[in-house]
Image (cartoon, rainbow, N blue to C red; front, side, top):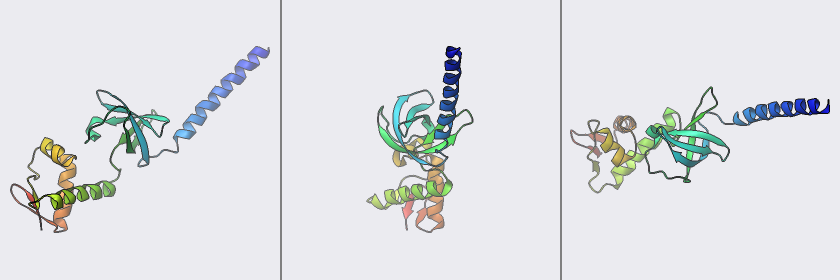
Length: 163
């Protein structure tokens, strides 16, 4: 009889542990800034350890820098899926956060160039933009459009120039 009660108590404790782990996970929400430890490279990207307690996935399409196993980086919660798996990004989430950092990156690159221009345009290859700017072509085009609307740059046929 005691052993049945013990089994019942043990099962109840296991259920409590499961419920607690779900509650713990709930403190993470999309857009949160987190600490990531790169674990292993997979076909999809990298498995990561989030805040030293949760597993997550950093998709290859989100990576614009060299990463190594056990490397610590800052990341952001991109999505918490229904199955409990967590997708992360190395870039802040939300249009305003992303566009501001991309605009700043393009502007800095232009200011640091000796000639005051970059030999990149919206017609440049995605690989060229990724190599020189460490961002996607889409992000580059949005940042350049933003700078152009602010009248901070000129867009020429073969380059962008500071005004």
